[in-house]
Image 1 (tube, rainbow, N blue to C red):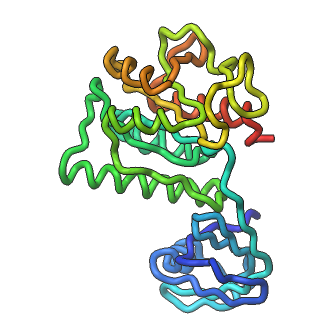
Image 2: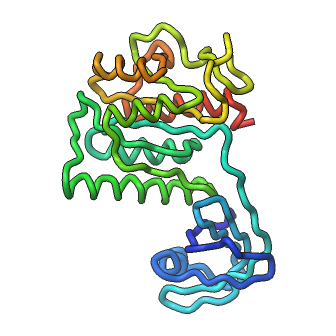
Length: 259
C-alpha cells in the first residue's frame, strides 16, 4: 500500500532519526479520517521541495501524531519551469483544470481574466475562487505525491500576462487557427524541433490557455508583441479546462522533464 502524504509546516531542518510532529488540520485528517496507527508508513512534505519519509511513532487523538524520519529527500527546482496562464472557466471547471495540471507537473498556474471570459472574479467571489484554486493545487499535489506544489498566482490582466510572456524562454498561445503544431515548436531546450528559439533557455516556458470563446484579436496582438507565438495541439479543439493539461504533458515530454 502506498504511504499517504501530508503537509507539514516546515521540514527545512528535518534529518534521519528525527521525530516530527504532525498536528492541526493535517494531523486531524491523518488521525480521524485516515486512521493511521503506530508503525504505518507516512510521507510528510512542505510542498516546497522537501519530503520526510518514515513511520508513525505515536498517535494522540484527535489531531496529533509523531513520525520517526527514516529518509529525507529534496528536489531541485525543475528546469525548465513551466507556467500555464489559465483563462477563467465557468463553474467548477477551474478546479478541474488546476487539479489535472498539478498532477501532470505544471509548476505555476496564473488565473487570467480574458476579455471573453464569462466568469469574472470580483471582490469576495474572486478571493474565494482563488482560495479554491490554491486548495485544489495543494490537495492534488498531495494526491500525486509531489514534493513541490505548484504556485497559484494572483489573477493577472492581459497586460500583466504579456509581461510574463516577454520574460519567458519559450512563450506560446494555444489557438485553434494556428498553423504550427505545438509538437514541432522550436524550443530552447533539448528535444526542440526546427531553429533554436531566440531567447535564453533558463527563463522557463509560459503557455497561455484562452477561454471557451477564444483569445480575442487584441489579446493575440499584445501577446505577439511580447514574443509569444500561436500554436495548435491537433485537429480537435479542446475545452479550456483540458487544453492546459494536454499541452503541458506535451511540453514536459519534449523538454526532458518526463525522461
